[in-house]
Image (cartoon, rainbow, N blue to C red; front, side, top):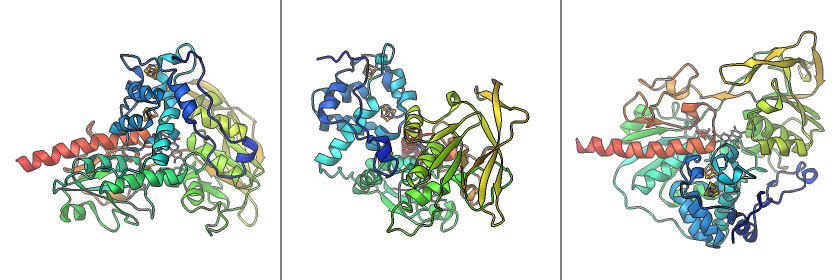
Length: 464
Ligand code: FAD
Ligand code: SF4
Ligand code: SF4
């Protein structure tokens, strides 16, 4: 029976005042009954507009129909044909701007909860099915991948399916990229990322950790080792700073450093000895997902006051609506149309306040967003002991500095064509290292595209 409700079946969540003191996952996921009820809202549209909104073209109506029939394993198999990390995407994809933004049910109500259903199916499969993925027949060819983030992992998965021997070289001691060092446990439990990675390993993908390419091996040395093509998926992990006075004070972090300490090095657990400052009042500068994650983590680490300081209005914030809503529920205060101009410290060089000015919005700039303009005589102090800067990142220059013939653009991103080929023969690139900071699913889409391009490149090379 078709479910006519204009609203999505609500997803149970932990109470805001309980969850803001722990790192447990906030959204609890659907039960089987809830998933079936939500799946019955789908109209199974013939022209599938939702699929065109998904960068990896998950066959949405087909998998949802299986969910509506209670055939969850079959639903999983459909999703897995095009998406190698469904439990991750179901949780962190900005669905409201992707698949769900095209859903016809969204015209007169809320779209079908595609992400919620994808998450349910992936979690169901992880809990209930213990089947090793098929190990493809080896084709005798080797490909190296730099970086074990979503781009590298999805490229590896597709190449392994084609029979390639795939080795991923990862700089950190753990695979997952931003999924493990950036996005916090309360949004994406690390156990889930680990399980998704285990299933890639079971297909034969080898992951070499603590391997910084550009230091331990260069790209030329990898070719000399017999790799026939190389994919660079090294992300955009280099934080940007504002260039204002006081950024070197004790108590100032980049969001990347702060979140890495919390997530990868488990600073929130008593039995880990990663140092992190006890903070009472924290200002997080920025308005994206990274800023929301840093602010919500600071709250959970015990800060009494946590502010988001953002120079435009809430309407222009790039963070997902859901994250802004969750942050507010957890007690994060939003200081919008506010721009920091100086970080102030005491004699011990520790942060004591953030000096800000008020802004107003002018005409739209080249990005289409209204330009913030400073208002005269509005200087004021916000008392804080910690400042976290979350205003963006760019690719680390190490690989381009150690690789001949690899062109980068003015933002330091590797230049690649629409098929992910770079200016260096045999070297392909995708994900944040090409686009600058973007999304998990776009990085995965690039990884998939690169796997197809690498396969074609190696086949052509060996023909001629
Ligand atoms: P990464 O995930 O950055 O992975 C790159 C990997 O390469 C890393 O593991 C790195 O250690 C490794 N590496 C780098 N240099 C080298 C080297 N020289 N040698 C070997 N290995 C190297 N996106 C969403 O869709 N939804 C969200 O909710 C969301 N939230 C986010 C929250 C935070 C805090 C952050 C930081 C990002 C968020 N994003 C989100 C963005 C998303 O995570 C990224 O767009 C995505 O991870 C990019 O994937 P990638 O594989 O290109 O790079
Ligand atoms: Fe939507 Fe992301 Fe799933 Fe694609 S992968 S269907 S964009 S949730
Ligand atoms: Fe179902 Fe919406 Fe896709 Fe139509 S557009 S098939 S209703 S998810």
